[in-house]
Every structure is written in structure tokens, then in C-alpha cells.
Image 1 (cartoon, rainbow, N blue to C red):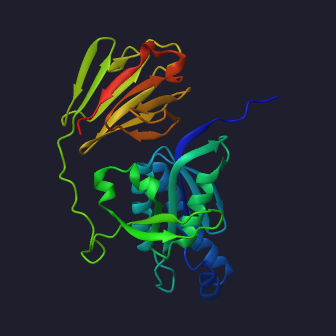
Image 2: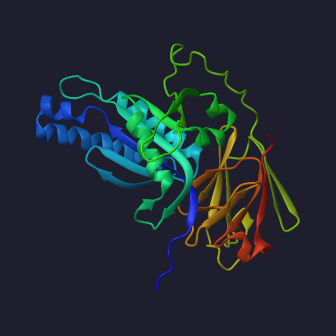
Image 3: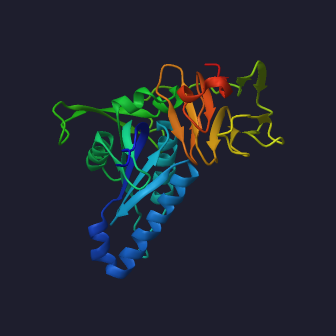
Length: 297
């Protein structure tokens, strides 16, 4: 009997092409299908660029999974921006309505299941063209800068949920009108990250753009764990943030202090607070080769 896939934390996102029925009426079947397919291709590329994976596309809808709420947030902002700039052959703009939720999921590598999937789908149904809606729980794990881009949409009755759900809109447009009543943006701080491994302390700052980790002797940080790949993972600096990116065979396991361990497989994770990184297996299996990280608040 095969072992059922384990539950893990992830962000599930749905994006629908708005008004697809009207597209078929105004453009005809062939051109409407081509237009929708082009928009879905844009969405797919954006998801991959932000460390996500398209789970499936059904008609005019795409479903994607991301390792965290930050990746899903920036992906949704980018896809709203790029799809809204697209036009049909008759000059009509395209739009999407989207929704996502960060929570426990069952991911078997082909499909994703669980209540988080259902909630993300319901949020997408509630969203209007040009809107991205997220749950209050998802906003709760966002960084201050992302939280400042959300505004409450009150509570909604959601099909399949006994209690009303608090809903927020993630703002992607940068006009003064769209940012009305939102909190001011957090001041950008200089990038700083401290890694600790085997008694060695490594300080990464704004002059470091790339830091590699793996069993290969040429890596910036050489890992002795036999489950680690030769070129296992890297850390990239993107402005004031440090992003952990897995490109290993067995995965990278990352834990932020006080939160559940996250498994990354060809995915990326924005390092925040204090935590640890383990190569090729969960921390509980062998803590000896873990790397501690500290990102100042």
C-alpha cells in the first residue's frame, strides 16, 4: 500500500480570464480561444518566474501553487498588470479575477487538494474583474510592505464555510485613487542576512547578489550531508530581500521560527525573521547539517 502524500503549507491561487463568454461572442470561437490561451501562457510564465507551479488549466482558469504567500502576492500583482495591458483584436482590454489562500494542502505532485484549495476557489468567484482577493489568514503572514497593499472587503458568506470569511483585496494598481485609505508603505531597509553553519558565521549584505550552497567544493557554503545535491540551493538578493531557491534532487527544507517546516522543490522562499535551512530531508531526520539564518526585522 502506497503512503499517502503529506500535508504541507502552501499558497493556492486561481486566476480566471474575466468575461470569456463575451469574448467568444464578439471574437468567434477560434480567435477567442487563441486570445484566452495567450493570456493563460502569460499567467503560466509569471507563476514560474515567481517560484510557483501551474497545477492545471481548465477552460479560462489557471490554478497554481506557491511555497508562500509572498510569492503568490507578487505573482498576482504581475499577472494583473500584464494581462490588463493585453487587448483583443478589436481593442478591448483583457482582465482577470483572482484569489489565493495560504494554508495546509495535500500535494501529490500532479494535483493539489484540501480546504485551502476550496477557499482559494471561492475567493476567486467573489473577485470582480481586475481584483485579487485573499483571506485574512493569508494577510496575517504577509510582510508589512505587502500588508500595506491590502484593504478590507469586510466578511463574506462563502459556499462550504459555516462562518463568514474575512476577505481582503490585494491592490496591484499604483494610482492614488487605488491606494486610498491604505497604510503607508514601510521604509526600505538595507539588505542584511546572517547565516550560521558548523560554528561559522557568514554575514551577507547589500553587496552580495548570489550565495551558493551544496556538496560541490566550489560552493560558497559546502554542505557535507549525503542527502544534499552538489549544487543544492542558492540565496539571491533582490533589493532588500534574500530569496532561498532550491534546485536540488531531494528538496530544501526551511523553517521560520514559530512556523511549520516548508519543503521546497524547485521553488523559492523569501527568508524572514529567524529560522533554519536543511538540505535533502526534514530537520527532524538529521539536524547536524542545518544552517541557521537571521534576517533583522
